[in-house]
Amino acid sequence: MVKNKQRKGKKVISKIITIACLAVFIYASHGLISVYIDYKQNRSMLSDVQDTYYNVASAETVKPHDQTEAKGVRTGFDALLEQNENVVGWITIDDTHIDYPILQSDNNIDYLTENYNGQSSIAGSIFMDYRNDIEDTELNTVIYGHRMKDGSMFQDLIKFLDEDFFRTHQTFTYDTLYDSYEAEIFAVYNTLIDFNYIKTDFDSEAEYGALLQNIQDKSRFATDIELDNDDQILTLSTCDYEMDPNDGRLVVQAKLTKK
Image 1 (cartoon, one colour):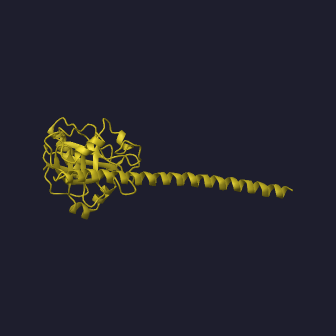
Image 2: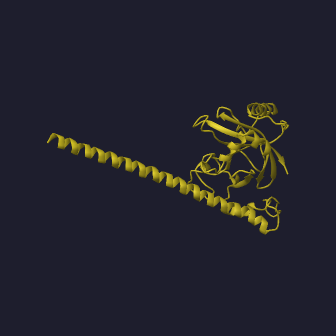
Image 3: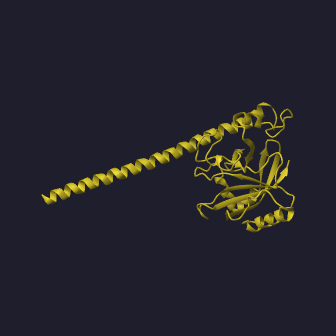
């Protein structure tokens, strides 16, 4: 009798464990499916945005980066602004997935979890620091983006940690609503947030010059790009989970030259 009770008890425990494991599996699978759907929807949406940006300019038989006198807004952005009034620019880096609109809110929180359409998304958006002004460009313009496992957003910034890629891809295109720039990459490095590489306002040329020097000292690779205290730079910032899950950052910085 005792043995029968023990066997029944073991069966009950076994069933409970099985049900618990199954519940955990279903929960985890649901999470993975949700992530996959989010990735897929985000890629599809951004593909449509890219088509809009480039095709509108093509249909008007002008280059995507020409300027229209009527609005002061450059061709290609008009249609995007109709979709999202927070569009401020576009970034394109060859041989990466980085070919995205740049958004800007009145804070640095919204677009961490909102996509181009304002919907909740783990991928968020590529966005400019709220302190920057595209009409009066600061010395340091800062752009943020997540590193997504499907290779989207700013994941491909890790390619610049490879010296061969760094050397062969030192320039890329950065556009705002009003101007077009060539960006020359002069630094790539891993850091923690205690290094204030996202500072946008400086009390003196000397303070800005000190930051430029610190950036070059931190860079994994040296370049012959000359930087003066009145040069404008573009800072691309994303997470570095290996250095620190919360405070680690991967940074790529470039000198801006207006086209």
